Length: 193
Image (cartoon, rainbow, N blue to C red; front, top):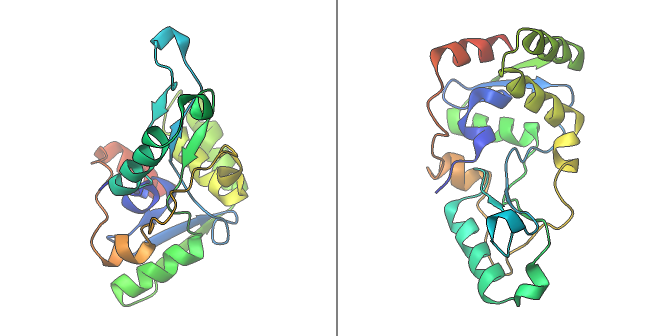
């Protein structure tokens, strides 16, 4: 299964292994669906009638596979072409993530809160140094402002009769895989966010 990126990377402020959670702005109450699977409208230069398919790790492989079958084997091409279709299996709030961390670790997570002003300064600092590490700070910012969910296309595909993974399945049930190993330099930067 694919990892659910916000839970399997410290980039957005969730460190399951060390039971640390960093809220930014209102991320305690805002939902996070860091990355999704999106089917973009037709891309003629690629000679692909369905357009681009961009998979991002926030849905399990099983959910993505079920959606592919549902979308591509049961629909006429004319009903799915030139659409921006998005899959999002799970979108918890920061408080929901904190609760599952407590359940997993037997104690409340260590929680720090960063203001949007602090994160904006960090973004500007990274940009002035031409550092691509601004992306992590920006992701935390858009979670904390609620922009993350607003960025999803309106055409959100739901697979009928499919039981989506829950936080319990992923975190307590062992279905969560790591996103990728981050370089030490990146990990050190994330500790400062």
